[in-house]
Image 1 (cartoon, rainbow, N blue to C red):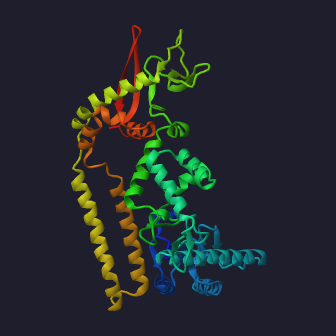
Image 2: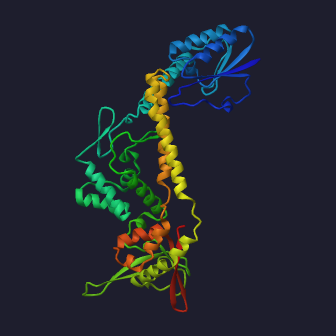
Image 3: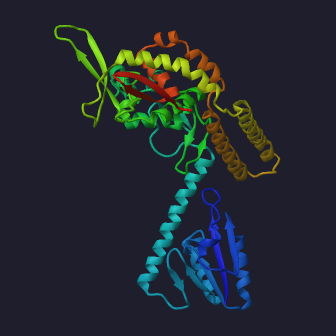
Length: 431
């Protein structure tokens, strides 16, 4: 018996299924992508009188309506074709179906086709770079065909991003928003704001595709790249440590007991003077490792980073960042050139509107992917930066929040070593 297989895929939101989906070896596969030409060819090939076994994924793929599916099933039955829908576990073997099964089958086909129509509508809007359904994100209003900046709420979002870029603290930015604007948001909402492509002028869809430059951005590309770098850096730490006010928070570990060090604050009676100490949180030693004055450890850390950072950076095997950046920018420019040609190709009837829209959508998502790779590249002048931050006065002129920002840019861990009643520090750099 000859075994045929047929599949229908909408190019707007589906791809052609892999051959393994049929679960067995087939003699010939008919695949339609947006039209029904292969289905018509299949019906013609079934007219030679040979016994044929036909595999489909679902019965609704045989037509665009219940009537069309019914007509196709009647034609296949008249040709003696045995049919099996593998996803629905439905087999047709020229036997009259019970009425209850027939009603259930019709309802299933109607449901599947209704879902397909909804997906087609969403896909057409996506191809045209229209905003997804739902309420516009905070800071925007929904316009006719794109998001527009809400002048009353966009400054709140902008200030939130600027505070995060300045201090690198998500929880601190959330508290800042509540204190200055009385705008209460959760930490998870703040994290969604920081990662939402909408604020960068892009649209993100459920498919995972991102289309660039669809509306006015609230933050620039450079600011967005810096936000991503800060978020990646903060993932190495616990949430509370990432937003702690002290620059050494979350970095120091005792090399003897391997316990993280926490910062304790002590005040003298009847005095406004405050003393800070670093002590291990879970020290198994007896007697326990003693606390270290915070100011002394900070001073020693600055000495070590000024002495060790230039040599660590100079020994670092760095790729040619300039060349990688130029290659990515050349790819983006080439795709932009193709994108600019599409209106002329449509006007001269070389491409129809639907094909041109789909091609434009694919080009813009590819450009967004390349732009994301470009924004993740490390700074080209890392050696020059290392020379600047290796000056002790640079660190002494910074506030604690600013020192925290720079420490976490370079240092992965500060190991506190003790020997014969003395102590010292060693640094583990991120690179």
